Figure (cartoon, rainbow, N blue to C red):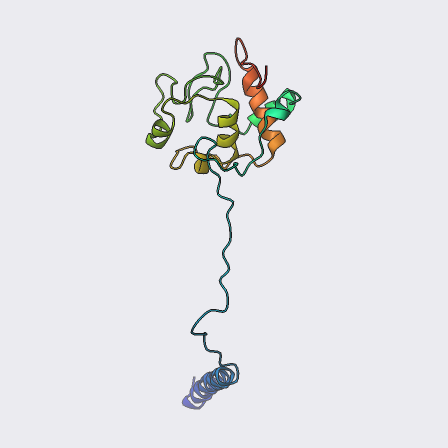
Length: 183
């Protein structure tokens, strides 16, 4: 390549840089906007903080399932429970996986499955508590919000009917199912 061709390419490159920089300076001067000293309003997003039923007098952010349990669909609960099978088992004498076996869990003391290493936050939360319908409902809605720091990686079940169906399914996984609320 001769020096004349090299100079043409260099000038074309420099001209392009000059045009882009000029356009940038002109647009900055035309559309100059300074941030206000004081914002006009603050937007705060409410995340719908979920609190366990035991912690306060406020109603939880999720719907209660007690009215739905009597008419819950075990077949639908079985389908929803497939999400749990990666970490839990439901059959009697089932082995523990990433999570404990859930056979006969309703009415059982929390964090009490022999040989399973529960997270420290769940152990602290579970003192003198058992897995009743309200506790399962809150935990299955958003486990990490219900028990802050739990190692359960499941994001939760948002639909009330899904929670009622899976809790009815879990209830059926027992030698003698726990009585429904109000029985």
